[in-house]
Image 1: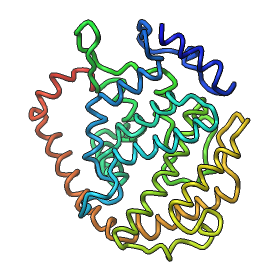
Image 2: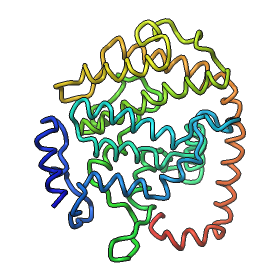
Image 3: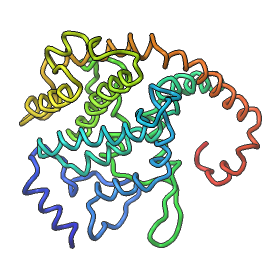
Image 4: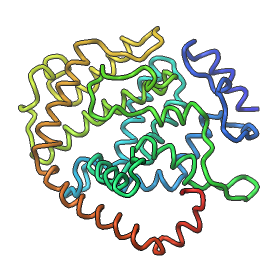
Length: 321
């Protein structure tokens, strides 16, 4: 079988610390192996063909209502995370298919309007259900486990993509929010290096594209970028991206954890703090958040009071409650 040949190639070519497809912990519901795809390749396809993946193109991020079509959305962010993660993974001889699967699935449950939307939804959930919360990493897992439907080869439709454990874990543990890179708990770190690569690539991607978009929107100028960031990472966005990726590769080679050097970590944290002050908090996108609150508060309250309006959806998704 082609799949078995590919699994043999993985064993020969990948690093001893890579997660081999044949060593996957498997799926919650056992399935027959695919004749030509490894388990992780199969997961990539299931995610890309899902409705949730297609909906990412309509979810905005920092720029909630951008004037123009060159600003990033949740789909372009996902693709940039995938590109960065894949480059690092290949250089370290990790499993590129597992890396890609986690990357394309990591934000499937993200709220519209970026983290502003997530905050509003979390507040509304707590208002109606005090013991519950809305966290996009948990929602991403809920999407792939419960909400997405897929068509089996025998023609039957089932709920859940039934992804492998490693992909599900990588999705659940991909985010650090706005915390500094060093502020993490070991139990929140993905067990696979591929998952750790995606986790760091997510941070790299949004630093890179949020700065690029903010400059394009004339909120800030390249000359505003902190001196420490320019000194350590480079004097333009392209150099900075290359510097970080190369640093991750060099620092992580031969190790059992994905790491970066202290100076690059400090520069990235400085970069993040700069964006928080100049873009996320004190700029035009922040003013748009009031509109987000109005829209999401209205919709949430309306459907909670008129649950019958969701009858068709609830009937076709009986497992979501």
